[in-house]
Image 1: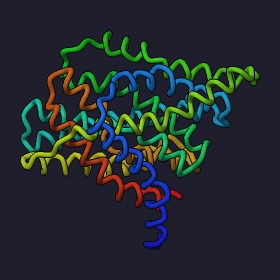
Image 2: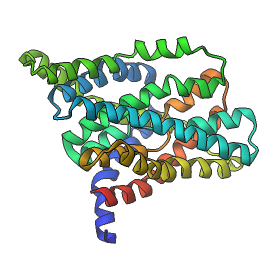
Image 3: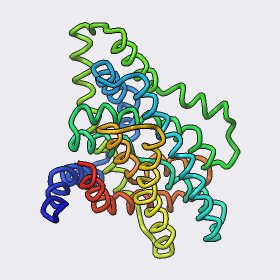
Image 4: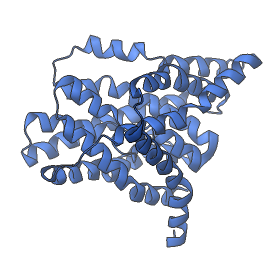
Length: 305
């Protein structure tokens, strides 16, 4: 890939996303907006409609869909082990170690990953990215909670959190409609399609508003660069190997690699705050890895496009 090609990818695919993020961050500094309510609309309305609409019309087989969800879960476990090893070698305290692992494991496959894959690969890429997102949500609400609390929360509660989010049900219903060749009534097809179109811009808006609150302190620079390296460089390399193991190829393989290369998810700071990990480090990791991803994702996309 030439420098011109790399620049075009950054300009045409990455830059539009960061323009939206920047505008949202500026708005957050000037107008008081209830970010939590917007986030809930995304979780309980926009994203489920997007998922159902994409899954009901996708050309993916059930096996391929299951592989994408499973591969993201396996990736999370591998990254947790790698991050734990690095944190122990670095001698981090318990709170920092928990946040370090969270920031390495949890992927921004939704707010950032869905629109990026749509811009890069079109609707078929977004449909596959949605399944990666489902896998990452499951791990956020199970492994993520465990890492943040280090055993203080029961497995039952973590599983209940997963079951209360409508995303998984939207995937199952959409795949059932697709595989059964059921024709979705026009009013439902159009309404879910329209609501689904709101998901990506809304997620980018929330991401920008949340990033506007992040701060980076001098003593965090070394561990943040370490976690950014794990999240943005090591994770996609691990995913390359996993796609071979899972037998993924073509567009499905490319989307999985790109999703694995996403920066730290915003949910990591939420879990850190809720369960006693280092919240400041989590927020700084989100900010730093998101900014560095302008370069790293441009490279990754240049290799798979």
